[in-house]
Length: 261
Image (cartoon, rainbow, N blue to C red; front, top):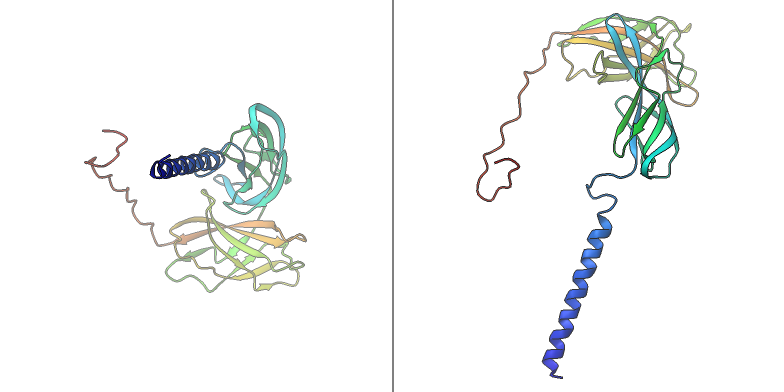
């Protein structure tokens, strides 16, 4: 056989094999991730709420646990139980949680009631939240309101139940209704009888005129926060910036891919 023809055939075989291997790699990588639709796992978050004078208000993050109940069709994932503590706004990733399936997901605290159903049908990539309503002690903040242009150097919280047995208590400022954490600090002083604590005022940059909750927690033996109580708190006199809607997309032009034309 002509040597030149044999050489060309050899290169053709090499190129074809390389193409097949590349396609196999793409197919193999596309099944579980790479930005595709998830087929397994979900996220979960526990929250504690309390009944205030103007309805239910966010209090803090909480422990969350879940147990698989039964499958809903063709399922993926091997994890059938989980338990974790979730801080404010954070989710626990049940990466191999079995879905789609019925799960029982709850906050294991001493809840007065739950604002979400115990059992729910869970799908891949979803976020499951259980809001647990708890009884709280109402504390008093001094000062209970601040001028954001000249906030006080320190804040005193009174009401009792404070302890430094496992670490100094912590303070967190939350928007009363959204539950967004806007500031936090650790106590620098605590009364001998546990009746009051003092905190340096945290950085309140980005806080605007409105109502907030000051949540005080002791440090439990396992290192997790144990809520002592909540004090109402108000801030003045910086209004939030006006809402700026996003700019309109550019018109469809040559060389652009447009969803609607």
